[in-house]
Length: 284
Length: 289
Image (tube, rainbow over all chains, first blue to last red; front, top):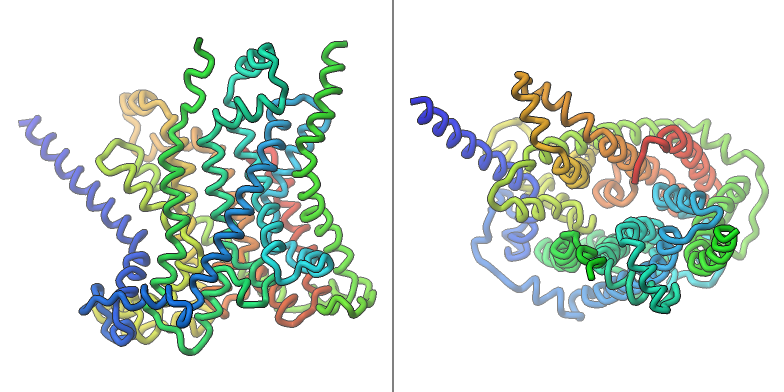
């Protein structure tokens, strides 16, 4: 009897749990669902006053349109975003690895202070610096160039990159380095031959983080760029939104494709971060 | 003797390795911050070729005697408090909900994080469309399907409904950040502690208070502090969603690039910088990265 009741309770609990889970996922994903469905709807259906959840007639027209440069400069925005985000993330990592290694392994005066200042910068950056950065960028003659945006994005992500990388490097046993230095490797060789390979999953997640920050940036793109040939996706799409002839289906298709690289990269990095990169490293 | 020598040689290498990072941060963070203070004392035209005029503390006086600034400060604080409270509570709740083995856990976790990783611009388009006054699905659901209201709120047309909208958006977008942080720490709590509390007859709330809360405290403080700071100078999400909610980030941006008053905008940055520094100094010792 008692067992039957507890089993029944268990079933009710399980049903309750999955109902809650579905409710939660519905709230989390509803805007994505609307985005996806609208991208397949005809222009008339998208602005119907009795909205539909699924398209009555599916159309792929919007996806074809956004890849047509005569209709929509989406591809050019996409390319600019890709150049800015990949360059910025790549350089942030390259610079960050050396800085993080110094902070993680080397003993020197001022280490704590440098550490603390990077941390403070991590909290601060952004809107507080737009006025002087605008002046500096114009002063350097970099106004309306992708370079301006790339440099800014490197600095926006560098302090975080250093912190994340440092915490990865801290988990690599120092014995490994000592063994390597006995084998005759110098510090720089140690970084390239031991530290980088062993913290690859960390490096990937830092890359994804920096890529995301640069890919998502609207603020700096909006103050540094003025020629639409240089526009990145956030500013390019927002400009189109403000024109009277925007088409919802097209904007939704563009929104989806804009989100895609970040989502894919995030999933990949999520897959890689299972820890344990250094497991077994000291053995043998 | 040996350690001193090592510190010396380490210092040299450390400086070489850290040079690019320090150089960039000094050039594009430290120098701008100082330059901000300088600009704030000038009437600075947006055209770089025109020279700036020294105006002393005039910019500060005009900001601090402007009702719009204090109104904006109030709106920002309210936005920050509501969004931090909402996203942290929801994130913690969902993390506790997830802190058990179940099928599709990893997949569900990834799906919940989507709203946090997706670019603002994509999300904002979807929200603007959903909350559209004429054909938006939200008003359709609220009024026509569930009859929760007689008349649809005109979300983007007045400050109050726009404010509610940006707060809901922030909670929806940022709760996954709290969720991942809490889930990670919850998984480190030994389940036997819960079992022990259960044997002592602790209720669910007592278990939360005695076991969970102390364990997650450092993460809780960090999540609240960092999220508060970031929401305090939020710009993009609100700027793209509506033009009816002038939080400080937008007030600053408009002063600089819509009214072309760089000097005044710089003095706003300095004031925000001071407020934020006080907050960081006050919380610094308790916040872990």
